[in-house]
Amino acid sequence: MLVALAGGVGAARFLRGLVDVVDPASITAIVNTADDEEFHGLHVSPDLDSVTYTLADAHNHTLGWGLEGETFTVMDALDRYGVPTWFRLGDKDLGTHLFRTQRLRAGVALSAVTAEITAAWGLRTRLLPMTDDTVATRFTVEDAPGGPRRELAMQEWFVRERCAPAIVDVAFVGADAARPAPGLLEALHAAEAIIVCPSNPVISIGPILAVPGIRDVLVARRDRVVGVSPLIGGKPVKGPADKLMGPLGIEVSSVGVAAAYRDFCATLVINHADAADAGRIEALGVRPVVTETLMRDPQVAAALARTTLEAA
Image: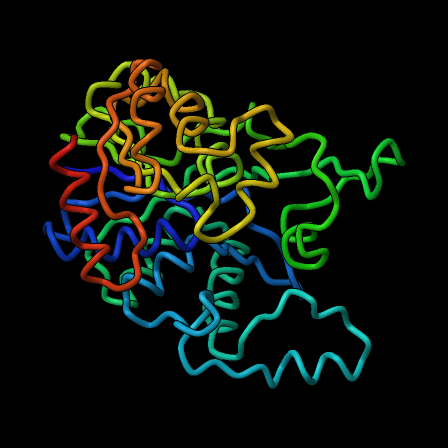
């Protein structure tokens, strides 16, 4: 059995490659839920949905999120009433959020609702939210150096304000009291290999590690953990990792990723563009593996998944 820690588009693409090289039913993906928010009265789980739609080959290739062939008639209608629609929910996508919200309000746990959703999409891979409890990523930001500080929810900073305000601090509110989702720790203990997907180390992997108990198991099983760097040539392939790592004192490079993961990750897969950093990574006690990590198409994603498994 394989376990993957996942969050964001990079993780979704990697997992799509992984199911092409191993039995999808042998994979458990532990997915970040600290990005979850309520919009228009609906519980939205962006990372769970990105992984679900990508594994179902139903994701929107143009936008990189949501469903293929999406329309936004409902959002356009809400605009008439002056309702903020900066977080755009597509008409097809609304069905998922309506179903999830109704089930959660009926008292069903997020992990159980997620299983119902993935079954409806015909997925054989097991998706687990990192917790059934509420954890929320919150940023302390400055609009100008030394100016007043304010707090933003993750989606407010990322979508509404387009990552413009400078990050001062990141907090995962509620993480201390959260419990791992049912079966999560058991899956980590039983896994033949544990993969840290090419996800933002601060806001995709960070919240998962913040849930009590998860990091401890990874540390104990370090030799079985392999990570994939989300950076190429010191820049993120997608997303704002560079705007988050630097302010938090993490070098914006694959070396920085290795340093952040070193206590629980024995091996890090990096891109050819970062081969010169292999020595610095090895000096941290992490074994570097150099390969192509830019997932331009499903074939490259599958090749990367195969190399990652061999490294593990």
